[in-house]
Image (cartoon, rainbow over the protein chains, first blue to last red):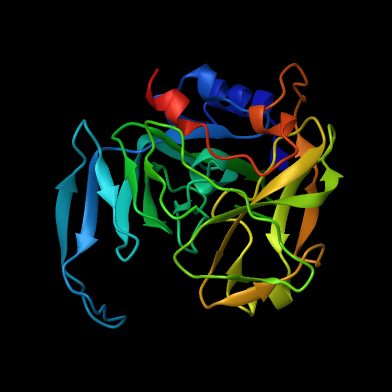
Length: 149
Length: 131
């Protein structure tokens, strides 16, 4: 089952879900809006190797924004520390970012139980688009589990 | 859309009508569409996905926001892009809708902005960036 906004709030208050920093204005009917941190990493090589280390370089998103290149993958992270030992978080883009053609994760939207940290974002855009540090970029949902944890 | 440019201002769009004989979608472009059906629930959480046969043709029906919010029913904006050129037709079966059981008290006090829109609606993110 997917947690409602009110249930997410209850769990943040009793400590079973971690979202830090937390601001109630980012709470939606059944998710919480998270923000992008100002650090991105891009791969140095045009051809990636699935079996070897791919070197990256770090980019700081300036206050006046950075233009995403559709032919590049950007690794970013959430500003918020997110996780839970009791519920499975799933990271998604927001409707507002999807409508701009921005993928916030490529295929791995599922976070492990007990992983409580800033979540990695895998950004790619269909069109060139400028993004800004600390902007609301995605939403996290929480799902109840069945079976021993 | 051929260029979203800067999200601190409204995206520039133009309207296309898919003719009966079909329209060829091109890679590196973003198309906003809308479902024919009005869908949604105040009791179950709605999510949308592409159909298997659409995915096999390299078509994304949602970019990254497949999840709806509990609340008002509406026609859903589709965020479409293709890996290879693909001809699509009006009223074709394109996706599927899933409903999830919620856990916890439901807050029906507010309606999400986009849930009041029944046409392909461009992003209003610029309004939040400029706050």
